[in-house]
Amino acid sequence: MRIKILSCTFLVLSFIILRIAEAEAVTLQYPPDKTVMEFDLLNISMEVPQASADLITVKVNDKEKASIVPDKKYECFSVPLALGINKIDITASREGKQVFNTTLNVFRRSDLVGNYMKTPAGFKKDYFHAGENSRCSECHMLEPKETDKRPVSPTSFIAETFDKKTVIQATSTCYSCHNKIAASPYVHGPVAVWSCLSCHDMDSDPKYSVKKPDTEVCFGCHIEQKTDWQSKKFIHGPVTLGKCAICHSPHSSQYPANLYKSTWDLCVTCHADRGSGRHVLGDAFSTQGHPTRDRPDPVRTGKKLSCASCHDPHASNFPHLWAFEVEDMFDLCRKCHYDK
Image (tube, rainbow, N blue to C red; front, side, top):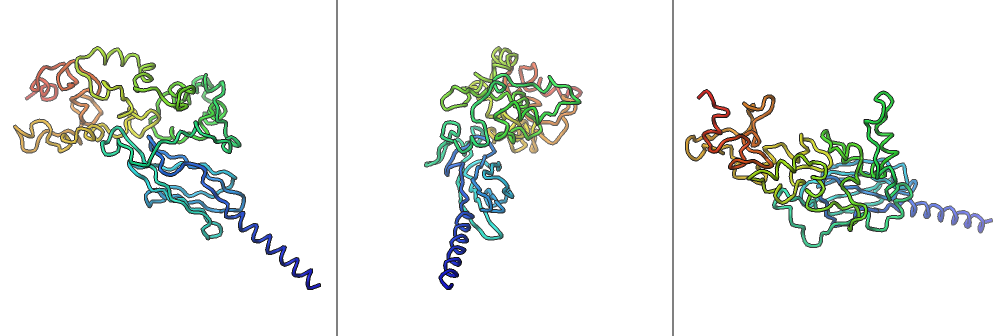
């Protein structure tokens, strides 16, 4: 009898130990440590076996950015990235006890800000679609289908019956993983209809990369701008280099024209010497200088004063990329101060 009790006890303990071992089997699937990202969202994928964890928290640079109650074998979610190196702490817990913890370092680079152009030693891009991701295929289609090549346009549906999210989910293989890239108020046209293959090349190496320079892709649609800008005498540096994505997000943005920042903030990122508020007159006629922001634009009704009030951000036939048909600064001043 005693042997039977001991045997039963052993079996119960073995079962408990087995369950505890299973409960700790949380693993990080993506991304690898020291990954380089170009944009401000990082996709994270974790394997979370049933009953292994009841809470996942993610901190980016010591600030909590995600809190997930797992209910699937694989949990996929996105967190925002700041420019530079981001320290990402991922913790999984069960009944208040930590069962998994890891720390990643992810570098978000930028062609816009000099300090973040160069990738630090040891960091490299990870081309997800070029790797082996068979586990992901349990939930996601990883190859484009016919509707991705000929995307459905929301305008083709009757407004009263059109459920945009449902239609896009059914017609875009990209949507299920990348839907957060379209979450900002200003969305680039191809992204709005999930025509990802309009810009991303499925036959490129690395797979789905975009041809460079950016203008090779952008001017495919923006033909009018190409014709206009290339006919001008003076062209802004990024346009000359064909780097549209220095200033414009190709996906979505919080700012009009898909800019990464407001116009003034964007301009002084490169033209830092113009950020003092003393630009124009500041060195000669006035100790305070001419305002460059925080005022109504006297010419463009309804808009705020910014660098674009006087300068064309793309191209112009006039010196200093002036946005008006003037040959000297005094003629430029008269565009606003005509009654002086």
